[in-house]
Length: 373
Image: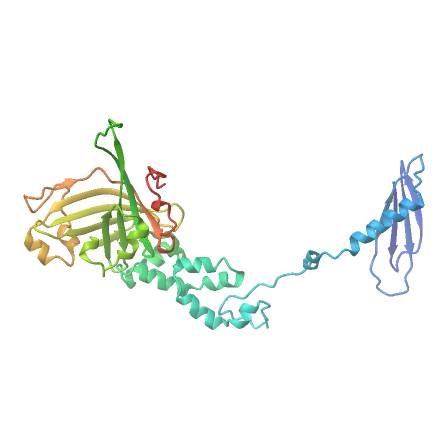
């Protein structure tokens, strides 16, 4: 192997050549008139052996042409080499360095207007916006967005209590509090899909028919401490339009109150009628990922009777009536207390924008049983 070195420097003016075993080194040092000239080093490797390798001139020309065509060919991605993307300063930064954003949308949308747009978005929409670009990701980290979301999501605790929890558990970070503190989601419905087998009527060809019956429990929570409950066999895409306080009696949507303590949910709803009945639920909130809060395990489901005076006096806050009741306690002898053991499938959260495409809309012919996870 031959290594040919060419170095230029003012302080070097001699030529050396030496050989080590089968490797020969040629060091050529040339003087340069320019002062302070940089040291240039060029290395050329060639084959050295006892057999000479002769390359025809035609083949050598073809090799050169192929090499030239390779380097001359236009490759747009090579223009990106060495181009450093300048970091985007966070919104409200005190940096005085002039910066011109190259993105057209950033030049057309000032930071003040972008802040106003983000301030009107839901926290989950903010998470989607942070995936668009780096500038939006830095802007979304503004504590003002997450403070408003936290104070609205836990408004039952009060502003003072929320600030105490923020400092004691979440290091003063509203964003961390939103991700780690258990909360009930209000941007969709919690649905529990339950199935059971029911014996059918014997026919001419089928002697022992059975049917798979499917029904749902639906819950919709509000930050004010109220919620809506509906028990129906309709799919979620058909129920979502009537899960509001403007629903009629024919929709069989009942309102109640709830409390949230850590990850425990206490809820109660009153069934009006000749024999008023209260439905008490205890649930445990959890999530498949951090901050999801998209699952609720049904710990207990109890129905009890209440007398007419209690039903009329505490119709606006039925949870205060049954607070402290035992599971087998009832205030109406005609309506015994019943602790239900069936229909205890965990609740799954479905956002409003996914109710049309949710797998919970599948019939029992395609999905006989659903595993919430």
